[in-house]
Amino acid sequence: MILLDNREGEPDLTGAVAVFEGYFDPETGDRRRPGDGVPRLKVGNDRIWGSECWWRADPSGTGLLPEDHTDIEAAKKLLRGLIRDARRPAAFARRPSAT
Image (cartoon, rainbow, N blue to C red):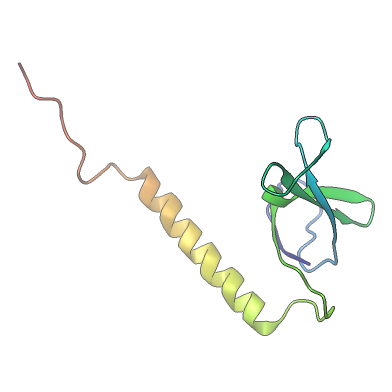
């Protein structure tokens, strides 16, 4: 299940049912062992790398739950805060001492 599609310029697949294909090398497309590759999901005719979306297993087929929406919004708020903080000048940046 795709919780949030992070790709830009593509159709939004949030909430779509996806099939986990396994772990693959993102450069060659060769199958890899867990921990050595990137997860790949198939949604219809599209294949999405696990790093391009937030996803979770959905064995019961219930789809997006109300708590999923809450978790997604909380994660987006946290991510926006981290990005905002990363753009600020460091509060504890050390200036080189004059010699």
